[in-house]
Image 1: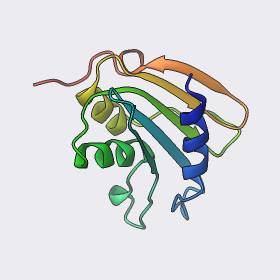
Image 2: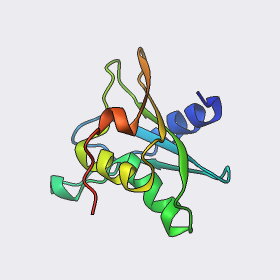
Image 3: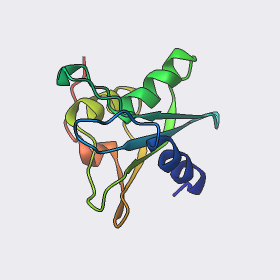
Length: 124
């Protein structure tokens, strides 16, 4: 578990725009080359336009030319542990079939992989 990623994910969660769910989520992603990207959830009154922290971090990395990821840490400011939504799982799997994922809340933590979270990812 990467303690730096945990610190970044927790910190960036405070930037979340979450007036509807009140769940502030932060994600930190490290590339194969060691560069770190972070993201927070950005909600919208039209719920379908909401963007999750995981996808924000990945899209930031891709927009900067990085597509090889080795680890992602996801933090939710809650006592309950929440795993990535289906859309996020699919986007994560698009870029890495064996990325390590740590998910933590204020009281719980698990370490897993995208293969465990999405064993039958869609592929073309």
